[in-house]
Image 1 (cartoon, one colour):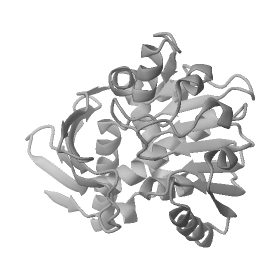
Image 2 (tube, helix red, strand yellow):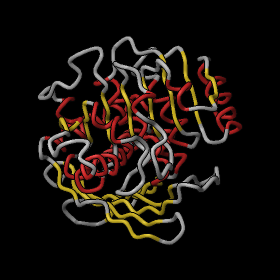
Image 3 (cartoon, helix red, strand yellow):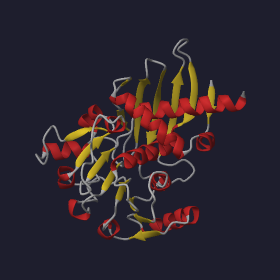
Amino acid sequence: MRVFSAKDVETHLTYIDCIRIMQDAMIKLSSNETRQMLRQILPLGADKMFGIMGGTLGDFDIFGSKLVAVSPSRTDKTSGSHQGVVVTFDKDTLAPTCIADASAITAIRTASTSAMATNLLARKEASILTILGTGEQAFHHALAILEVRQINEIRIWGRSLHKAAQLTQKIEQLTGIKCTPYQHVETACAKADIICTVTSASTPILHQHHVSKGTHLNVVGSSFDGPREIDDALVSISKFIVDSKTSVESQGSEYRHALANKAISENHILGEIGEVASKTLDARTSSEDITIFKSLGHIVQDIAAVAYIAEKTKEVTQ
């Protein structure tokens, strides 16, 4: 069995490659070429939880599971908020073949999926990127989205202005792009072309009146039914695209809350991002459309990423 550390993952899984891999995985999901179970979550008290995800990619060509312990408030920079493993298995012998650091896989594949959705849904001329959140996903989203749009301004909002300033300095030094910390969500989002919500907020931080016409949003922070990052009104006026319709209908908090409060109808989900990628669904039809990509995260993304690293490193060692 091969083992891939966080450093291995970061070395071999670039954003540009991962964006392509995620698009292919999402097309397969929307084409019913995958099988998966809904994410299972076991609360561990306070803000800690244990999650289990399992599934297959293709005709059982690749299958595996992700076991991860999550604490959104965890600030330990050495391990992050997600700790766990992604395990893949051999389809013939059924033996485990690879085990990879789940924190690194999750960080890169989540941001790359948002970048893939941004490429498909955001206006081509989009140049102002706002990120709500200051954690690991905020950093990775900034870098991944630079791969798909010519961004000339990055704005960072966080509950801690100090953390927002630290992150902006890090991103600006790395990319050379103007990056500014903001104290208020409303000013951070004013005239933004792309907004990514990557927070651990339990109640909405982003509201309809914060968002301009034509904006694309990646709503990422809440991965189970309960916490919400955006309000019902914003959900209701959007073209609402998801990673997995089945998953979002069962566990997508923003969608479920808006539906329960009759802000939207049951058919508000326009479709899956895999359908947009395969050109079987038109999402943005006007420059004034507000598009939302609701990302819960999916096991096929994890096992596709690990399978790619395994194949790439096999080629290196041969």
